[in-house]
Length: 427
Ligand code: PLP
Image (cartoon, rainbow, N blue to C red):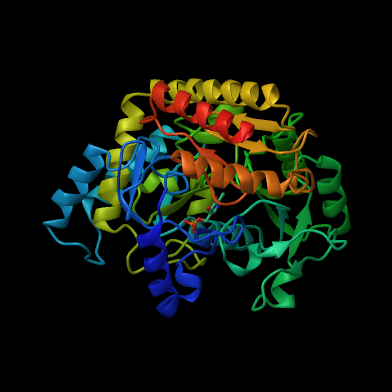
């Protein structure tokens, strides 16, 4: 494949945008090479500036669950745009999408819309602190909840009690209120709670982690978290920015039958426009301004174009819940096909999958947390990334990301992908 124009555009971008990108992972630092500039996308395919066609397994990092340029979403946005793009005043469509979301997701009475997943998680934590009157939070190593200061805390270096900032600019004052735990390790969580009695406002978790590859909760981990939260007056926050409206109509809460206290959304809920949201039962949500003292706001929150896109997307998912089974079946087919060709070619691997989230790890050990995810062979990953790209298959340019399956993928696309994996494995 030729990437002449993409390379030239990247060189231009680097002059005026830090690293040439508006979000770091796009820069291909994890795999080397220069990023691909997209010209347009339709259904399961991306078309780049050099005229290459790529099967897309990223789908804008999750939102495009029904494929790119999904017609009902495009039509809804175009129609809304003709009537004005932002008012900073209430509109009827905000209530419509709120009613629909509340009807689809268990255990929530009210929902507040924001502009990104970061804002949703940041606001959910503030609400949890305001509601409980406690300061500390527990997050899991390898989970990503956006780029708000409290979440940019990395694991490692004896982080059992106080976190260490992993980004300059995050103060020690902020870091000390974020406690780090190991995913899938309930004893570790209990130790943190015991060491910080009556200080922890909330535990925030990706109920299926998607930011260290795809890592499912094991051994009733979510149920055990629910129990320790109840026993210690701690709120359980499910960050469903990836899993919400993807794993089931009601997200991970529905799939696993576990009740969260606050749920965060992003990605699918905005149909590809900048949207996030957080939701909870009345008792908690009524603490938010203007009803309560916890402040949260946004000039563009509930933006009509974003709401129109989100409403069209959620309506489609609500009307045809069979989509979620179809997605899971396609993902299973891909899983089995890739596992077979990798095994046939003696390539050490582990594949994790939940619903339409899947990741391939180049290590034979089970991947259950950040430590095991980090053991994957990155050289093999890079070889597969570039090899697949060359074959016309685009996966995330980092080993620490889940792939997102879209309903627009045909079984021919999946076979093409499995065949491409086989070619790279042989090459
Ligand atoms: N939470 C999770 C689980 C995510 O995967 C992401 C982004 O990938 C975020 C929060 C942050 O969302 P955004 O990038 O929209 O700010």
